[in-house]
Image 1 (cartoon, rainbow, N blue to C red):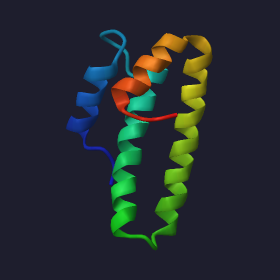
Image 2: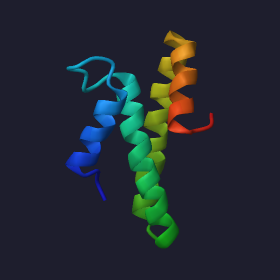
Image 3: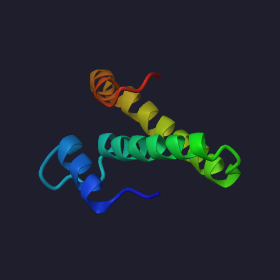
Length: 89
């Protein structure tokens, strides 16, 4: 269910701000979005998995908080990020 190491590295390479960036808010949002997408497909196949649904809601809340932070700090960066990720907010 978790991200594979190669997929995680691909996301890091795509969204990192500089060469050694592994934890910026943009990158965290991108990683959370990938996990949210995986859990969403899992829950479509397993609708009675309530523990995973709770985990999904926690991930969505964490992503929402990070997106709010980015929006307050730099609105243009926020717009670019949600456009690149294809999420609506």
